[in-house]
Length: 235
View (tube, rainbow, N blue to C red):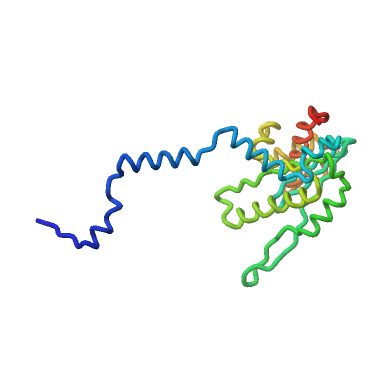
C-alpha cells in the first residue's frame, strides 16, 4: 500500500532526518568553546571569593592587616545559628533570628528577621579587618521541595550579604568539606555530641535535638579556626 503525505506533514517531520557529519562537527566545536580550562575556572572562582570580602583580602594585606583571631561560623538554615570564636578562645553561639509572616490564605511561615540579624552581627563588636566568616554553602536535597530550596538559598545569600557588607572576609564551605575534616557523618546528633566535647562551656545549649544548628555553627567556626592558624602571618 502506498502512503501519500501532505506537504505540511513532510515539513513537520524534518526533525527525523539523520544528523550530517557537518552538524556533528558544529556541536563538537560548540562544546569545546563552552568548556573552560582549569586555570580559567580557578581564576573565576578566586575572583568570586574576593568579591565576598569588603575590603578585599589583598587590600587588607597591603595595609598591614592579618588575621584578627576572630572567626565566625554560620549555619544559614532557618533553624541555624551563628557562632563566634574570639582570640581568647572563648566562644558564643546565637540562634538565627526569625519572625512569622503571613502567606497565602491564612497561612503562616517563619522567615529570617533581617533587622535582628544585622543588630546581632553589629553587637559582636568583632573588628572588620581580619575577621573571617565561614558559612556553610546551601545544599538543599530534592526531598526538601520548592519551599526548602527557596528558604535555604534565601538564608545563604542573606548571611553572605550581611557579613560582606559588615567588612568581614566571607568563605563559603561545602557541608562535606568541614564534616569530612571533622570526621562527621550526616547525623545531627553526632554534631551536637562533638560540639559539646569541643565547647564544654556551651554543652548546656546543645542538649536538644533542635539545637543542631547551634552545634553545626560552632563546628564550622572550629573548622575555620583550624585553617587560619598556619596562615596568621600570610600577609
